[in-house]
Amino acid sequence: MELAVQGNQDCLTVQVIGEVLAESCSDLREAILELTAREAKEIVLELSQMPFIESSGLGVLVGLRAHLRRHGTELRLANPQPRVLETLRMTRLALLFGLED
Amino acid sequence: MTSESNDQIPTPAYHAIVCDDDADVCSVAKAFLESGGIKVDVTNFGEDALERISRTNYDVMMLDIMMPGMTGIEVLQKIRSGIPNSRHLPIILVSAVSEEDLMLTGLNEGATDFLKKPFSPAELLARMCTHAASKRMHDKLITVNRTLEAEREKIFQIQQGLLPEALPKSDKLTFSAAYRPSSRAGGDFYDAFYLRDGRLLIAMGDVSGHGIPSAMHMSILRAVLHSEADFDHSIEEILSRLNRVLYYGLDGWSFVTFYLAVYDESKGILRHCGAGHPPPLLHRLDTGEITELALEPALPLGIEVDFQTQATNHSLDENQRLLIYTDGMVEETHSETGELFGRARLYEALQDLKETPSADVPARLLKALEGFSTRELPRDDVTLLLMELHG
Image 1 (cartoon, rainbow over the protein chains, first blue to last red):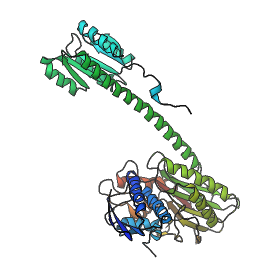
Image 2: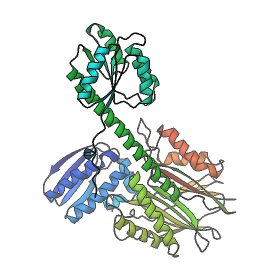
Image 3: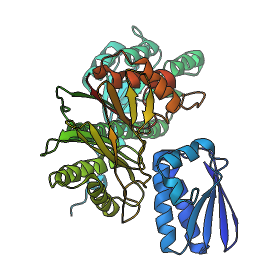
Image 4: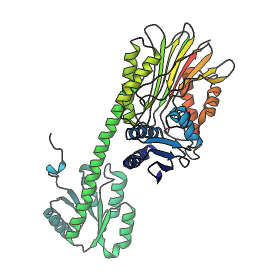
C-alpha cells in the first residue's frame, strides 16, 4: 500500500494505492494521523486504486473518522471500487463515510 | 519491579568442540579459545565428535576436513542430516589451501564458515565467538517462539470454550454450525440458546480484524449477551446495550457487526435485527428458492455512542433452512486470480446441498469455499450457523 497526499487547508486528498491488509493497517493509521496537524476542514481518501481492504483496515477508517472529528476534520471516502463499495454497503459503513444518503 | 534484563546475568561461557586429527593444532586452538573465555572440548576423531554432539548442545564447532577414518565432510553430512537439534550448530571448516574443492563441497553440505590453514588463532577466536553468539540468539528465539505458541494455544482454547458446546434441538428444529478462524484465534462469534420464556435466541458477531485482540473482544460480547438476555430485554435493547459496552470497551480502532434474533417455535415467527451484518438467507427446500431476510439498515456496533434500530418479523415454515453467516464467507477470494467467492456462489453451494442432511451443510459449505479459494486458511474468519425447520 502506498499513499499520495495533495491539496490545501480546505481539503486534503489522500490517494490510497494498493491493497490494505492487516500488516499495512498501522502504516495507514500513522500516515493519516500525521495529517491531523494540518488542521484541514476535510480529508478525502481517494480509493479508485485500492482493490481490497481487510476488515481491520475498515476498523482503522472508523477510528480515524472519530479521531479527526475531535480535531474538527471530516473524513470522507471517494470512488471506491465495486468490491470495496459492496463491503462498505454490507457493513453500512458507506453511510458513515458519505458514500450514501 | 525487578529487571529481567539478561545483561545482569553473566552469559554462560560458549561451549565449543574442536575436531582435528593434528594434536598440535588442537592444543593451540584450545589454549587460545579458552583464553577468550570459551569452554572447549577436543577430539581427534570424527566418530567421537558425532558422539559428543549427540549428547551436548554445543554453541560452535571447528572441524578439520582431512582426517583419517571419517573425514570432516562425512562428519558434516552426518551432523546435518542425522543428529537431532544440531541442524543449527555453526560449523567452521578448516583445511589446507590445496583442499579448496573440498572446502566448496563442505559449504554446499551446510558448513557455516571456513578457515584456511595456517590460520591466526585470533581470527579463529573471533569467528568462533561470532557464530556462537548467533547460535545462542537462535536458541533463544526458539524458546521465545515456543512460549508464544503456547500462549496462543491457550487463548485459542479459551475462545473455543466460548462457543456453544451443544446447539439447541427440538422436534421442530435442528442447528448446525461451522467455524473457521483465519488464524488460531479468530474474531467471529455465534451462539444459540433458549430464553426463559421458551423462545430461542440466535446471535452472531464479527469483530473487525482477527487474531488475539479480536478474540478478546469476542469474549466480552458473549458475557454481555448472556447477562442481558437473562433480563428479558427486547433484541433491540440488547443490541443497544452491546453497542454501549463496545463503544466504551473497544480500543477505538475496531467495530463489531452483529446479528441478533429471537425465534418463537410455537408461532413460527423470527424477529431479528442487525448491525452492519449480512442478512441471513432463507432456503425453501420445497421450491429451492433462496432469499435474503431483510434487516433494517444499521451501523456496526461500537462506532457511535447511541445505537437504534427496528427489529422486523418474518414467518418461517417447515422445510426451510435459515443460514446466518459472517462476511468472510462471501468476501473470500481465489488465491491466485483474486476472484471473489461472492453471494452467487454461496446461493449455488447452498442449493447443491439441498439433499444433504442439515448437520453436514455448514462444513460442506466451508469445503466449497476452500475448494474455490485454494487457500489453506481463509483470509478472514468464516462462521456459518444453520437452523433447519423440520417437515
